[in-house]
Image 1 (cartoon, rainbow, N blue to C red):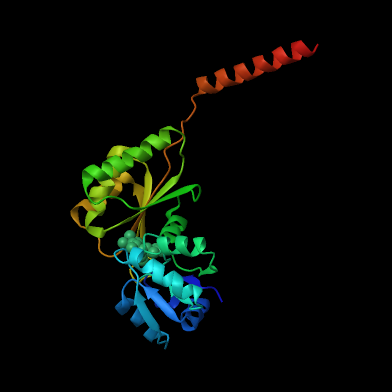
Image 2 (cartoon, rainbow, N blue to C red):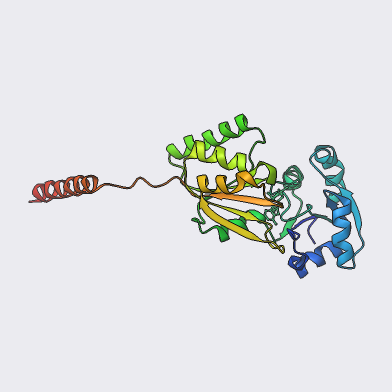
Length: 256
Ligand code: SAM
């Protein structure tokens, strides 16, 4: 039994709790969670009662030493976040690093994750992809973050981009993405796994116009296609072919 198990939980649909996830929570001595009320509800649905301890961005650093000590003493922990995969735009990374450094056994129970589900439904190239977490909330910082990505694209990055976004910021973020990255194919995945699940696909400019007047509700993941490929013109192709043929005939001549 690992000292620490990272347990993925549903992102909106309780039916997505896997049997292994339930068993891991049942078997843990202590469940580390972001909000004890949220995880308390999940446990109640599955008829579980367990010791809950909060672990969030504000206390994670201070909790690490006592938690590692308890793990060394044989206590088994499960880590969950409010929804989805722990660590992914959620707490847990520092604890995982510390457990690895302490040579403790860790494992994970895979399950729902909004970024991967949105990517799969987006209709955009699934790999390579770059998951950027949340973009900065203020426009100036957001544009700088996007500019760094655009610079990386100019240097050769060619990935589908995924971001988490708050509904009231979606239109402004889409507008910044269109301004900095150019109008390219994208998808807005909303309320995944829930009753009003929706994926809207379109160009960044079109999606910005869609959401500008009426801010969407619910939880949102934004997927943006890679920088459009440089499409070679006929002349470019002709030149490349001629050069290639020239090289070959030179080689052939040299061989004779
Ligand atoms: N750890 C989670 C995961 O694995 O997906 C993500 C946690 S992050 C704090 C929460 C953000 O994920 C939301 O603000 C939203 O951007 C995205 N998200 C979570 N659930 C979602 C859903 N059902 N549909 C679309 N996006 C979702």
